Image: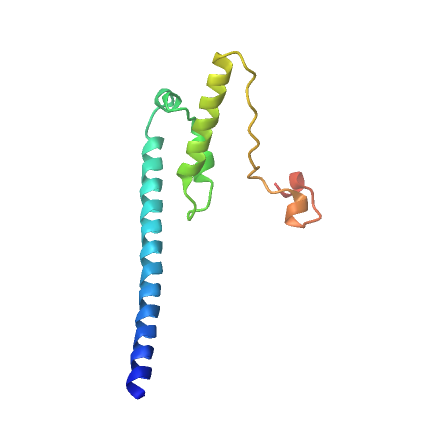
Length: 123
């Protein structure tokens, strides 16, 4: 009977170790991808304005992407901005009105902060 319980305990321990190791591998891959994407976005900062315009970006887009926290992926913002401009160019070229994309503001509101002072007084 002790052999069965020892075998069961050993298999549960092995399963726990595999689960922990698997989650560590996933986190390490996510971190490596984050570092790679941040490095790629940094390379975009070395391009001149004409080259950025060719891929549908501006210097302001780069500043917005880098204003995000370090742990977030800056390329997500850059991809969405380039996509918005591409869609609007296509809509204008076929004679439709520009599509307005609602993007969240990066400036906190006084109501969201829970502070009594107005936003202009804090900045």
